[in-house]
Image 1 (tube, rainbow, N blue to C red):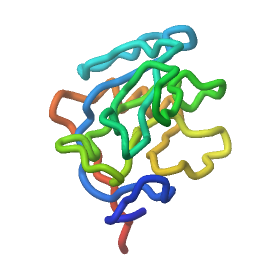
Image 2: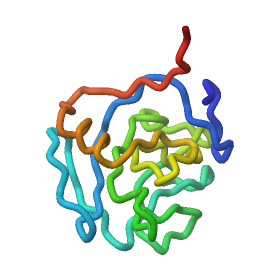
Image 3: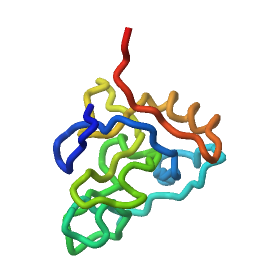
Image 4: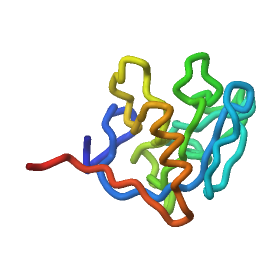
Length: 142
């Protein structure tokens, strides 16, 4: 975790981040029940992670002229994504992009900067989520 998150450092930013909206793979799972805005992930959806591009840290269509991460992945990690309010208001080039709350890998391996939960836990959080809710990312202390 880092209070000084930078693009590509593999750290999860610490702080409090709004739950902006939900993206899901309609070809793999049911539309999640939530009060948050929800949209299906299309096969050509991506997320720009190129700090030099004008659409840095925004959803784009692939193929894209700059570096962008595909949202339609072959694994299950992006079957359900919560877009977090990190580095989006305003966007600061190089501060980090594509920081999501998403499905954890089966072995609960570390992410490259996102927060990941087991699928049933993520579904339950979304069921309870309301507009204005946020996620606090902090180191636990005794």
